[in-house]
Length: 137
Image (cartoon, rainbow, N blue to C red):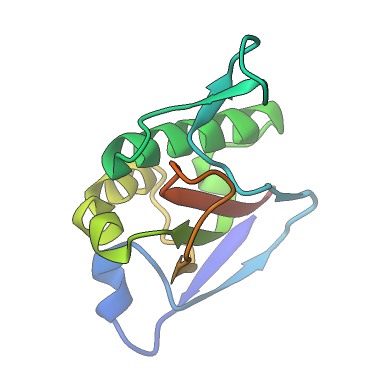
């Protein structure tokens, strides 16, 4: 897979993102469901338990770990990420904890295009962040 960064402006670079990216040589394409801060819990009605309810930093860390697990199961890694969509119930809290994401993606040596949207609520009221990933190999 080859990548070509497209940046008519350089302001996104400090946020670890390119404005666009041309990707060639992709044979496999992975679209992940939105990942949230939950773990399996056989004793709960939904079969899941929320991790770090109401805590942005803890949820971001857990969601990124869930993304790593999905990528690994697909035979991919962070280096294969092509695009991210962030959904949050609190943009200010998300941006105050952006270093969690920045440190996570920096290890991959890429700056995938991304979008950040504030929403009224996620699927469960205690959740503060959901991240969708598109990857390719």
